[in-house]
Image (tube, rainbow, N blue to C red; front, side):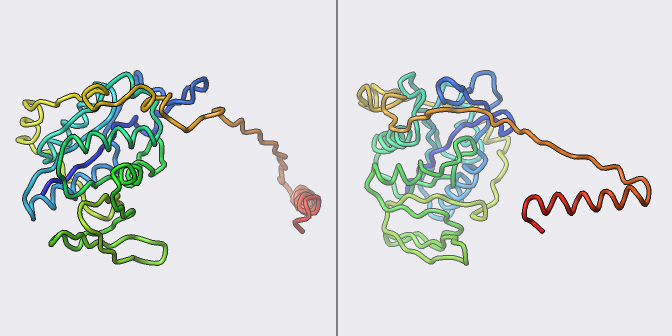
Length: 265
């Protein structure tokens, strides 16, 4: 069994900044980590490999420094990682990102599962997993909370919904996006870190994937960010000092008047 886990390197949540001119995220000079929700996908993939055998391949699209996230995935237990990096990929929206990832998956070859995190903490769209499925023409199950079984060419899962769970069965290969309750991500071991440090992370670019100009990056992204701005919060307050009985009465009267002015009383 081969399981592919797309992961993303994201800025620390508190350090997310956006370029108001281009509408894209500023990543230079910002500490980056593995998208926290992707760790649950990695853990599930490793558990399934431990049960069923096979291989777990982690892929990531990003700048050269994203290789550190792939090494972390290998340190956790993934068998290998592949970095998709090219200046032509810069500024890709979820459509273009899904396209590049799907072409990389095709290049990897035969696989049984693609397991994604629920969403990335920087974009917060949850669109890439279903996008990969669309480009590969595969079934997709989102918000998976438990994988009951994978056998005889099918995958049976429990999907979290508002009022409980749905029990679904899908034919392999299939794309899954998972939620936090799927597993508890393990910590990298010393042996895993040593293997990750010594291992090679191949880099695939647009030419290797046979992607044409205009299919990726800003030019290949149908999403258009018209304007980005920080909302200005303006608050007007009226402070009443109720220091004695007369002050309390005046404050109470003013509160009643305030509510009546707004038809709340």
